[in-house]
Length: 456
Image (tube, rainbow, N blue to C red; front, side):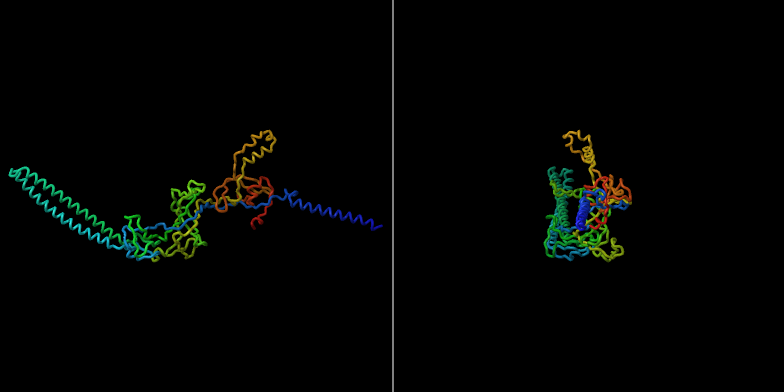
């Protein structure tokens, strides 16, 4: 009888234990899903403190390295190259021989003109003799005519002959001067068969070979012979978008990253900003407007190409104490960061902490939730309100966040200057992006988990 009484008791205990287990499991499940306890846990976010720092606004662009000064040499006369004592990369001084063109045809031209000049000078002397004879006859006939020893017709004829010989002599003189000018031009053309360097520099390009025939500028644009450049005075030519060009000014400092030296940064200065735009894909949806900007490379470079006997290698500015001197070549690719403006001791937060919210939309939603909104007609409700977009940050106060409108200034690659609306050391939400940009609202409870987001 005792065993029969215990059996129902055991069953009851088992049922109670199972029920309690199910209740506990259901509680954990509801809490995990979010049916209960969600308000107390809050939204998981990442935060950062507003702090004072120096912020430098940067305009980045890519371009090519080129010499600041590069002289293109073209011949003024045509002919065959008979001497080419240089090669590409040679350093030349002002006046050094670069190219000699075969002078035979120009020397023959000078000989021909000299012969014509001698002939014309002989004719001039003949005209001079005829003039003297006509002058003598005219003077003699004038005296005879005054004594009425000859007729008026004879006197007039002698006078006309004298004036005619004067004109002939003047024409002969002008003809001599014309041939002398031709001779001078021919001599200059002969001198132009010898091409010398107009300045010191490096032969950055040599486009011809010994024995090649070239055309002078008088017959066309002329054959490009070579280029002489100051290789220790290079610049980077970049194209800056129209939205950024207003922030760039002459003498702005710049950091230059050359693809050939990936682990080094070089210094530069803005020297020239174009006034005319370079427009690509004009008239299409892909139209782009850029402005050409030139950045002088101020870090010492290419010293061995500038006459090493006169220039002493100096330490590279980007690596103090280093004797490294880079060697740049025209056409190398480079990326430039132009430092356009700097704010010192500015209250700053990570860029991702600043988001944009539509205040007009929120006010409309508040009206729709009120009792007065029920009386608004359907036609009035369909009117879309104008956007009122404002920049805001979410400031953490205890376990909740509060939306605060801010005014921003310049920014760099990571931080943005908060001009007003936020104080130093205040904690703001910086992530995640989805929560900050859409889900997070004023007064929401949050759970700070910076370690989770940092480890990503």
